[in-house]
Length: 541
Image (cartoon, rainbow, N blue to C red; front, side, top):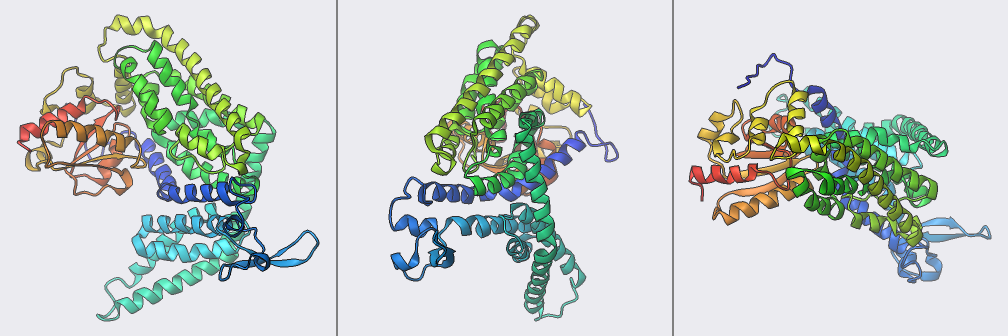
């Protein structure tokens, strides 16, 4: 059995650090994805060229292009606009512009502030970001992602100055006035300093993206994106980088290709189809179901273990991703709002928006998905066929997914009891679940709460929780609660945490007292049966 020490270098430390930073970036966006989708639908329906753009006067009011003097709806917010003949008139503000200029950045800022310093940090971050927003003339998503955490940190530092020094009865007075004054100062700082600086940075980034497109180099981004995705940086890349830049593009031209660089479901579909036809063992058997979940459900994490089991297939993903990006770049395809999750259903809704080009744009996007899947399938198929004879000669009943386990152990630099147990066919005893150093937790803390955790807490973990919940229910156990959550939201009051093996290190940092189980596939892991056996052995009912 491998032992660890406090002085030893933590395995995967750099990887975990990158994942944590990426998760922090995406953590500001993902809780607010529903607001992005709402804005996307409102835009799709009610702008002048929207599906309901001719629905007068409702679209005139909601889309923000109606003349208040002509319509006469009282009480709605208006602004002075200029007609084609040079005269001015009061125009309804509507929902589209205020949501993208104010609501979405402020939601991001509040979430960021809360992540750093709870409700108090969220409030100050919201006030401060308002200064950045009104100090510039473009949607300030990047500004919110910088000012939000900064304001949260400053609030935390400020409170430490008089922590324990405030006399009884004056706590509320000090807390409210200190936060208000700090928020005011940061808003002024945001207006005069952060706003211009971030406006410059946004301009540079936008110019860089424009240069990549004009130089036909945007497909090269897939060389970075596809390998990073299978290392569970997919949400960080999509929502931490592409979504803020894409929203700015969509605001200007109605759609953005950046929304599809990570979210295109084609490469994942092609890889899983290749495993379906050319894989062996458990990988071949489980790939068809995984393909359905990935393509329709948008849970991309489900294909990552397949890629890791045959690292050469990452080349197929890169080629497929680059093909999809090239198709959209040449034919001007894009999405009107982020497709989250990245299922073909969400992609369809975001591509068919009139602002993005309607049915014509949808067909281009479909073509990019189909070509990405085809290229990935062909290259991955060749790779799998080339190694198929060798894999069959190994006689490995678990199929080539076992190679992923071995590779993960090699990356960790040490043997792992958990991964070793996972690789051992027939290891159905509940005792096999106990990782080194966790025996005490198992012996003294009966399991009544199980949390599946993933990066976002709403995709692969939700699927795994459903699978295990059904197994536990069939076993006649009803006193165990099985839920799902983001790793960042884990608490240390959980009995058992189930994560993908690449995320377990981070989960242990958030819930050190819990028993941690690693799986390589949320959809169909033998560990689920072991957990049920463990509960039965404990006498839980």
